[in-house]
Length: 156
Image (cartoon, rainbow, N blue to C red; front, side, top):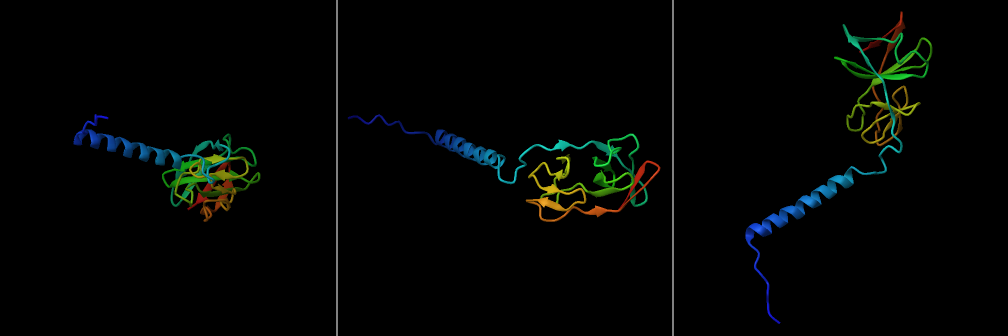
């Protein structure tokens, strides 16, 4: 039996080693993105976005004729002061909470109808910001609201 083994050049060996390392890194990355136990089980509906006007430590949102016309509706409010989740709880009452998830600071943009859902890891929060399901452990920051003449004022 003859030995037909051809020596491998250093360049070829290093190129092969880099390819193997790249494949291992990509495999780890894609497995981390997959369906872990903390991933949302069903996609949440994206909340409508309303503009908020910031003035003197408060944000004002016009809700008349908007997605917040009906009791139970919720929306994402964007302003220079921050991003908020605003829900109509009665004809004259609203709740406002910070839209930044307490788990890993993702912006919460969805709702499953009764709760806010973080798109990153599936944490669920009540309309008042309380944690309903993790991985988040801390509630969302709450803000006081007042309602008059079709405008909600969020006190910062």
